[in-house]
Length: 182
Image 1 (cartoon, one colour):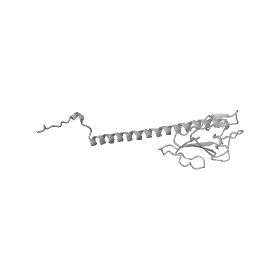
Image 2 (cartoon, rainbow, N blue to C red):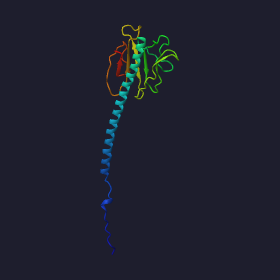
Image 3 (tube, rainbow, N blue to C red):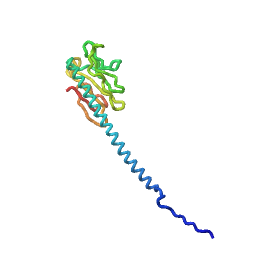
């Protein structure tokens, strides 16, 4: 007769069951999705704050320009990407200017080199992917007269702020935040 061999299992060698593994994976997935949503929201808030600060910086340069010429620059773009301002009168031509698409290479200058006055070394780049800023100046009473007001717009992410238009032109599509000289 053969001896009976009894198999014994050591309880310390047992593994996890399939249910336990699936439960752990599900919990980890939920935590990752919550963390990712919070991170994305924080990124949007950070970009929105940067856009508001950028517009304030440009507005300060525009106010300095206004102090020198008693009007805001008329916006148009030049081949080198800066706000083009007429070299002699510093009033420029045009109606709107979109800037801020990466890489930021524009500046706000007046005059001809080497004696031009620099109001803003570099127009800020928009931190949002593919985002741009929008600038225009006008005289609501007399479109052909000195540019007495300006509007700056940005495309904030996940916010629905509005700004009433000052210039007779409608608010540009897609822009939901703005500041003006009034």
